[in-house]
Length: 81
Image 1 (cartoon, rainbow, N blue to C red):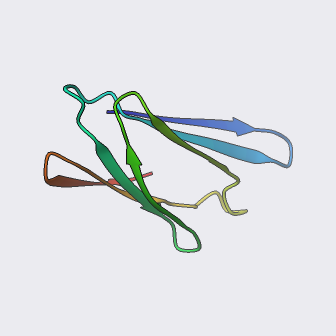
Image 2: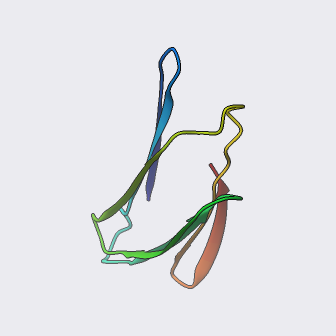
């Protein structure tokens, strides 16, 4: 699994690009579910070499936090992004 987060800051606009890429071996599927306090991005099933991408602007304080659960091989993991 590869998790990539990029951030771009301008004078007034700050953008974040979140990319979750399934690089798990042997055709293992990756199930992800990301949500913040305001937004639920839903559940996504990623096949090998598939990806999920979302772009967003954090709140004005820059404290937007997404909680993502990722499950593969019957094991669930949690990440704060």
